[in-house]
Length: 88
Image 1: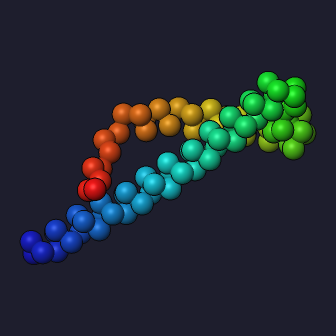
Image 2: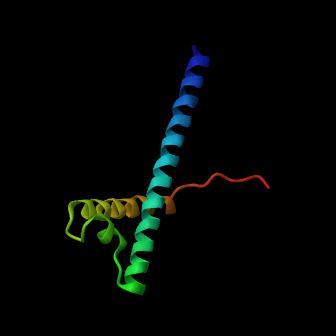
């Protein structure tokens, strides 16, 4: 019974870690997209998201802007997470 519990806890922990890694990567990708878009706006007055999805007021553009904003908020958690120590 104890062996099953240890295995079950370890399995759950690994699954949670993998899901967290996927969420971290998706959030970072969205933040990078947002950063590139803001860079294009600043340098060339060109809004790539708006041009791809039909203008700033288009529903798809607003969804992308919202996802980028939520991803940015999620990425704040990356600053406060404990890192695993690497053995050199």
